[in-house]
Length: 115
Image 1 (cartoon, rainbow, N blue to C red):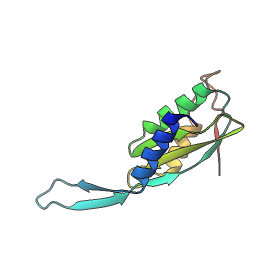
Image 2 (image 1 turned 180 degrees about the vertical axis):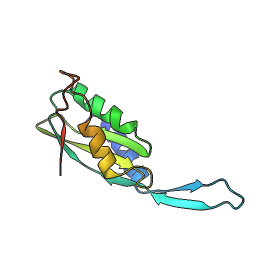
Image 3 (image 1 turned 120 degrees about the vertical axis):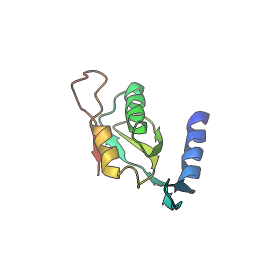
Image 4 (image 1 turned 60 degrees about the horizontal axis):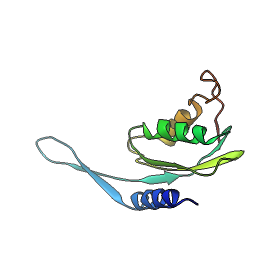
């Protein structure tokens, strides 16, 4: 595994094991605590490294997603995604993956999340 992928996975797991605290602005300061959750969805339909980059970029655009690290390209590719469940749901992430345009045909939506 490439050193950059190992480093990215280490950051993902570090983020997943910590608790993030957010402060609200009001007369009384109220703290909301939310933990980071990590999922590993398997995605079908990926044919090249460009697909991995495009899907990863689309998922990382979602508010609340901290990291999206793709695995090796194959018939089924697994992604490691760290996110804040208070800001984004698993279903939102799956929808972002499945709504990503294919690299061969921008009108095609070839990626399917295995559930």
